[in-house]
Image (cartoon, rainbow, N blue to C red):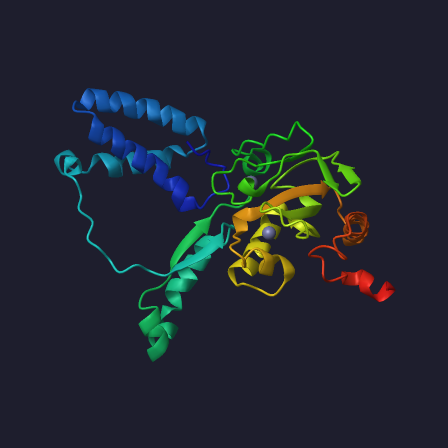
Length: 290
Ligand SMILES: [Zn+2]
Ligand SMILES: [Zn+2]
């Protein structure tokens, strides 16, 4: 149970003795059992900082309900959904609730607003960040790749996985590059290579991205879908090609500034001649040096 000193709206904490007592009142068929459990609950609440007076009032409220009626399933009548007013909890939130109610007449007096907001908004309180949320992740950390080269990230919905080429070397003509890093579709700050699985020897493209490889590939995919005139989009949308003909490698990673990435990209473009003989039509920022 929530400790009474916990940073929560007062009405949330005040309702705990009531709802717990109501539960016991509903479950226990015999009064002796009920009172025994209520006593246990009472000690637990006192220990957690709840005032004796509050506990007694709420217990009384709960046990005065007719048990037979509590055992019937309550059918909630459908009400028109109220517009939520979402805010992170702060000590003045209770006052905000009152203010919303008190100022509703201003909305009611406006023909347009009274139609949109016929009732005061429902105050919806979001939990502020707490130590537990800051310190604990329920998500398991992704296993870091153990082998060199690029591996699929194994996420069920990842469409980049199937394009990945796991080889650790890339060769064109007499030039071979050994890939030293360990990457996945989730790697960021990389220089990557796109080749064509249909053995189109001139369809080499080298690019760089700050984003994850997966996000960057979504961008390329869009140009393919739109049959763009950009070289990659054009190659993989014509002559019976589809995006699944892409063969993808990360050549270099851990490049966290734009400058580092562009230098690495240009070096690799020069190494593999993907500008003279490939899909790197645009020289990018190097154009002004030629
Ligand atoms: Zn993937
Ligand atoms: Zn091709």
